[in-house]
Every structure is written in C-alpha cells, then in structure tokens.
Image 1 (spheres, rainbow, N blue to C red):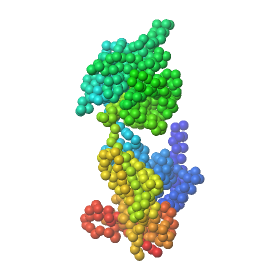
Image 2: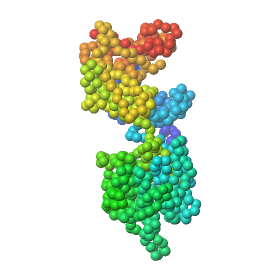
Image 3: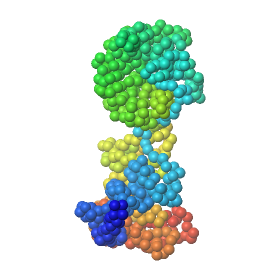
Image 4: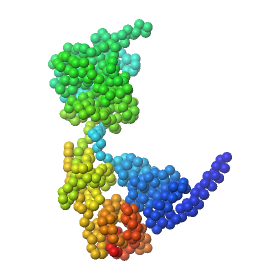
Length: 619
C-alpha cells in the first residue's frame, strides 16, 4: 500500500509538471517577455477553468509584484504558498504584506523565508530583529511590568494615593486558611512608593484588618475617608447552614475615617445585606458617587457594576450601570478615573482574550465599552485596573504568571497628529486624498483618506520619527517629515502641487524612477512617481511615450542590457495596468551605454542616478 501511494504521488507530480508546460505555455511566454498584463489574463483563464495550481498562483503573484499591485499580489501569494514554494516567493509575499501595513503576517512569511535561506543577508538582518513591528499608538497603550512586592500568594487591588500604595493580599501567615482558595484570609496592606519608583516592604493595615477577608479599598480625595470591602461577619450578617454546621457570610462595604495616622469609626453601609454581596468600591474624586460590584437584585448578570450617590454620611438608592457596562456574565472591579467619567472595570461577558479582561468606558458620552487590549489584557484573568493621574501610572492585577500578582502599567507617550492636505497653489483643502504614514525605515504603517476638510488623524508615539506620504489624482504626490514631538497634539500641513509636469518637445521630465540594485520590479517610490506620468497621459490622450531604462556600470554589458530591458518592460506594464492603452507606451533597455553621470569609480549615489528611466515623446 505504501509503495502504491509513492507511485501515485510521483504520477501526480509528473502530470502537474506536464500541465505547467502545456497549459501555461502561452502565459509563460508573455511573462518571459515581461508582458505582465497579458500574462495575467492568460493565467486567469486557467484559474477560471479550474486548471490552476501553485505554479500559476505564483506566476500571477509575481506579475503583480513586478507591477507593484500590492493588493493583487497578496491575494495570489496567499494561494501560492498553499503548495511548496522557493524562498524568494516567501520574501516577496512578506514585502507586499509589509507595504499594506500587515506586519505580523509579514513577519510570519519572513520567518519562513529565513528558514529556507538562512545565509541570505536579508534573512540574517530579519533574524537580528525578528519582532520589529512598526505601529501607531492605537488608543492609549501601556508598557506592563511586575511590581516586585508581589508574593507567592494572591495580591491584587493596588491603588496609589499620594505615595501610599494600598492593596489586598493573602500573604499573612498568622491567619486561618480560607477553604475555597487554600490560602490565608485576605488583608489590606500598604507600601510607600519612593521617588525612584521602588516600593517599601508592605505592612498590614492593622486598624482596618480583622480576622476574615478585608479589601480592596478606595480613599477620598482629601485622604480622610476610606471605603473598603470586608466580610459581613464584621457586623454579624450571615446565614446558618445547619446541615453542615456552617455560617455563610457575604462581602459587604464599610466606611472608615482617619484620625491622625489611624483609621477608625468603622461603619457598614446602609444597603449591606446577608442576601447578596457588595465589594470592590471606587469613590469618584468629587466624592459624590461610589461605584461597586454586586449581585444584588436587579443585576443583569451574575455580578454587575453599580453606583450610589454620596452626600456626606447619606447615601442614595443603588443604581445598576446598565447594559453598556454589564452583561449576562460577571462585571467587577470598577475604578472611576479623576475625570469622574472614565470607568475601568473587568468583565467575563464582553469579547476579550479570555478569562477576565479590563475595559474602559466614557460614562458621559454613552459610548460602548472598549477592551484595553494587550499588554493590559492576556488570555488569563486581568482585572482591577486603577490609575494615578498625578504620577501618570496605573496598576492592574493578573494571574498571567500563574498567580494573582500586581503589575505596573505605564502609558506610552502619544501625540495626536492632524494632517491637512491642501492645494499648494490655491490653498483649498483636498478631500479624498490618500495619506499614508511611514516609519523611520519608510515602511507604510497605515493609510487613510482625507475627509471633507482635507484632514486625516493619526495617533503616533512621542519622540519618534515618522513621515507622511500624500497623493491625489491630478496632483503631484509628496512626502512630508513629521517632527519629533512630545505632544499632546501636532499639526502637519501637506500641500500638494497640481500636476504640471515639465513637458518639453521631446520628453516628459519626471523625478528619477530608481530601481533597487539588481532588481527590475517597480518599487513604492517608483509607483509614486509613475502615477504622475499616468496622469499626464490621461490628460493628453494623444501622447505616445517611449520609456528608456538604464543601469549602472556594475555587471557585464550583456547582463546590464537584459536587466535594463526588464526594467523598461516593468515600467511599461505598470503604466498599462493603470488604464493607459498598450499602444500608447513602449520601452527598451539601454544597459549602461548612456550613463547620466560619467564616473569611475562611482559613488553609491552616482550608481543610483545612472539606474533610471526616461520618457520620450514619440508623438
């Protein structure tokens, strides 16, 4: 049976090779003559008839790659790599993905390329920095690092007031073990944060802690009032399970006031109950609203986020925050920010990465809650996010390392960049202009189109170099440098000149169409410039153009002649792909026979100037 399978496999492979030679003969001939547009049409016939295989898909992808049609090349490379391909195919696929800002997928293909060609310079460069993924700042992102005062027991609920960090921990060795977790009952601890960012050895908050669970806490803006969660046994609220000889308590909320350095005058809140739990309080900075989690009657799911008005020592009626926040799952660990409108909370019911995820919502705007994404959230439980505006740092709790631990969350500095595209001659704003933002290595990170005010917004990292590439039909594309900024906002004018290309009686003068060394495919820079030629030819439908392509002097005369001819044909095919009839443009390579700069030896800049294209007017 095994031998029969091998024979059948060999027969299938042999048939495929024959099919490529026979069925693709016409298309292959066109491809070899660099007539990519016509070749693609012939390959497409094989696709439509069901005769296409990995070879056809690769040829389609390569044709579009040479014409810098990134969207189509990505489509066909994705099909091609379903079968075994050579290393260069994976490299080209990666480059096209990167040109579309699909960096993570690009890195996957580069990894495959590097495995197949480990000694290639491009592979070595990639492996030196394999996780390079240029990106914009999406929303407010954070760097996350463990807080070293975490223990081998559960630690969570960290909140920083002035220089004192309050958190909840099961680290006490003197307390009884809680049957559910197998750890000691929870206590409230404090630690002092030094100016260096380090934390002192935690100590228990003796004046608040009692013999069962305590914490987390929230403290008023003046530092004199504390609300905290604690076991309902503190006030004698529990149910008796006579059958099992147990007393069943709940989590309830309590308030304490500060006298000197000691917390005292502890009182239960009036809506505590032995029938449901209340926990995880968070007091607004104006002291008027207390947020908490509870499974009290009226909850949407198991545990919900609630709020209650506070007026001195008086409390209103608790209100459920509704379905913008709460789901049929569990929502807990609320934290209200200093602006009194931004609420952070954890949820199992909203779409996330797994377990509890942290979300934020603007209560004033009534918008939907937003997942805070990685690295705040992981596939594990992530919860209890708090933020200290004065220190510009946050804290969260997570069991991402196997145990509930404390983590420091530091916001990345971000700048709201406003790009305004205008007509350089009239000053009029230009809508529907294509605006791409590039990183320091000229990789396209994202692309948008300007609105009716000519505006595009990007959120970028502080003190990071970027550039903007703007284009619009009828205008010369241009690149604009974005100055490094600490924000919070920056504005970049992007004036575009109406296309007024220099047209002499014999030539259309463009900026040089440069090619990479030893390559003939159209680059992004080349496409950017060739679009001007396309626009001129659309505006002057009688123009017939002859493209001359040149190489530098490296390589033999014969090889350079062939290379320049490939470059000329790639240029012609690009223009045709943009809708210009084939009879209006032709091209030929002249190798190194007509250098623009006479030099021996040449500098890299001089070599680049000599490998160029020129556009002569035939009629």
